[in-house]
Length: 393
View 1 (cartoon, helix red, strand yellow):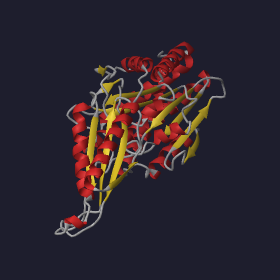
View 2 (view 1 turned 90 degrees about the vertical axis):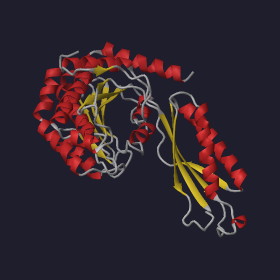
View 3 (view 1 turned 135 degrees about the horizontal axis):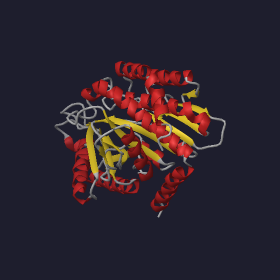
């Protein structure tokens, strides 16, 4: 299991300054989802220098894939890169570090794959925060023949990953009739319909299953106080443990809007305004393999697999296509919040550098283990097939 650990760690160590320069470049020039053209070019150029066959604008405009084939039979191991930033805080989710971890892991595995066989892919998956590059790639069949897809996310704890919530982003638009504020009987208030819908959906909360989350905002509600608004809109995130349940919750919310419009004499339409995310299917075999790699690299205080769903991510779609791993590496104290400037700063700190080395080495060594130990990979895939069979029941 650790036969190749020192070799891949040395490969990453020799390039660590180069990788950190890329982390710092993205830190200084953050790009939000679907606008990461400079980051895409930077990462694709690094892979080209390392001998990967690289395709940019892959599936989506800012996506890429770097492929290397050993020329010998064997499995395909994919490492996932994220590189979109957040408005205002830049790389407060550490995606610049995730990108370098993916490139480092892929390059290190490439350095030993000639002996092992198989293929290594480094896949650039943009717009994780809201537009789901991984979803588009999963739907395009990118991961259908991948034997394992892996990534490690920086944060304030070391961990083996865990469940995420399914997410459905729904927009409600209401249509009424303008009138003077002093003659409201001549109009129909789209804002009233939106307010009633918002209130109705709030009443749903009491009757939701545990680990269900409803987040909503008023996007539009009129332009002047003395004009009955003819247009109003709401934007919601509906989250739950599985997508079928989230879809059921969405239908109940639509019924809330129907009732509000019936009461106010208005009409409405609903749409999906961002990318829906599937829940993440844990592969416990991969998680345990990551634990062993972490221990060999003296990573301490490793959190167990998180069974309580938390947040949402587009890697959920990948986990329905192939065995997937989404671990965590600590680069900041627990007082540092995610999606903050402090977390962005941590990506270029000494702790960020150490996290890059250990995360990339763990992933590369894990990939080598899956290729060199067919029985281990067989267990990973058997668990995946069993999980998919249960979900289809």
